Length: 400
Image (cartoon, rainbow, N blue to C red; front, side, top):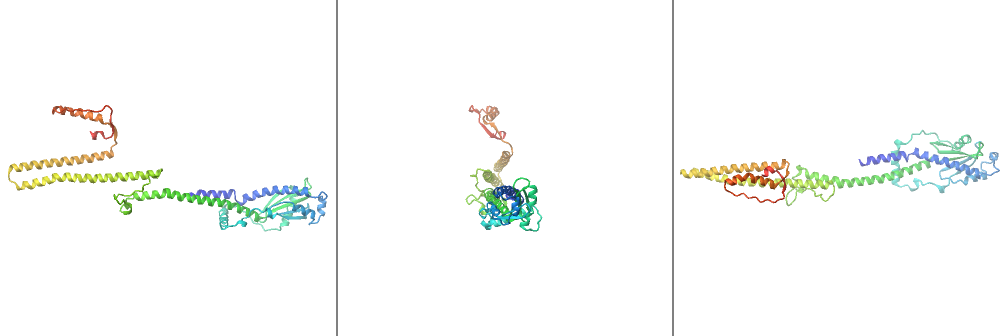
């Protein structure tokens, strides 16, 4: 999922910045400017005695004409033709190998070749569709541009089979002295497009590695701790011994409280919840043990009284045993009532909302309520409370 946006960005860059159509348009503009400047240089260097008529009479390999093209510094992979106005070839030259642009073949590596193939595959859906034409003779193709250049001036022609062609008239006015034609080979253009695409894909590969690394870091920092917490919270696996503390026997919750993020807070909350549950379970177990002990005492007394009553025939002893039985029954009844009240109080502490109240005010009210009974029984009820209130949070009615 993290790579979807990155892939879309790479495709967009390949389509907008590194596609063959964009590169050809950019190179065509540069070539048109170059051939215009070259034609001016040729016009300056052309001998003054070589007019348009003199050019018409010059031999195709005239030394003076050929020397003009030798002074033009063009990059490798380009060809130059100089024609007269009638289309007769006067000189032909090639680019300077020393000015060769960086080619992918000169520094080809397995990674770059693989990236190039990937680039071809990725750019195939968005590459401009062109119709191939049969290759033509280069000299004849250059000669075909002479007449349009004489009539229209500098212009550019794009051909799929033979690259880019540009022609410009040599000399000002309506009667130029010659026509200069410059062609860029399709291999050079394809190589430039490939280099540009490989650069984009290299940056994309680095971005992919960074994205994958960050994803792994996120998985290790977030997904793995969450998975550990989820496994620890699954009740169906509580029987596994490796998930329990060896000393206390409690479920072991991963301690991630040192982390200052939400996972640390979640770990702290889970550990607090588990600790509270264990405390509640232990309280219930202790409560059950205390109840069993309290009930067992009066039951033992009742059983002894009943057994003794069956063995005695004296009326006074039977009356005394009945008093013991009655006392134990009342004791059991009071104990059951206390257990019920304690359970109801425990439930209320969980369910009802606890609010703050003044403990001293509650005690004063209790004193006023019990004072008539104390006076009636001749008991001195004395209260001694501080002036400042004592505010506690709880259930006031239950506490009273």
